[in-house]
Length: 209
Image (cartoon, rainbow, N blue to C red; front, side, top):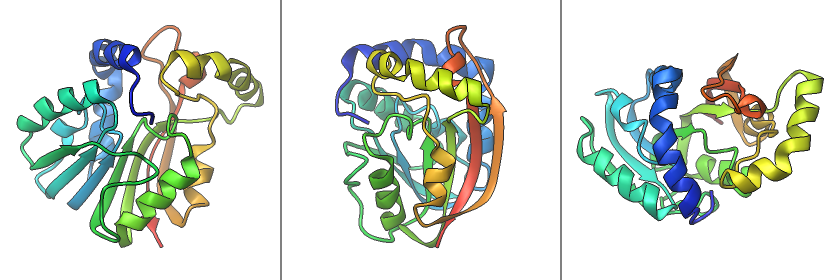
């Protein structure tokens, strides 16, 4: 979740609508089913989740460090049916008080944060006890051969795609960071032909202890 990837940010904004039509929009709807109260969304990107927030949400603080994507997200927030405030911020130092949110949302962001452990620690800090982490991420494959392939392409994948790593064991990282998994659905999703290294996905919920 680096501060600025201007080339990748524009590429992402251009190709994201096709991924939404291919199924990502439905995934976001599943991700946000049942979310309520005060919400913090980490790595909001261009605001693709905003249209899926239900009326049970009181307000959303959407954190996005990349300036171009943040500007696009601010326009999306203006059209949302729930109050959304888009702010600048980093994964390792969220601009929020301790235990100030009922829910946290992660949508395809833990692949690119510099330090997963630190980012998850910050999310746990700003969630109240019993608060729910809603996550939608691409992850390391459970298939040994596919995981080896992810390891082999990681060096170039991360450089070309804005710091994204296809081989992170994100579900284990969440479990090791003070969260209890409540639900986790694995599936493959490949909206573009060259997306094989990032095909394994999960959608789930975890509760802050």
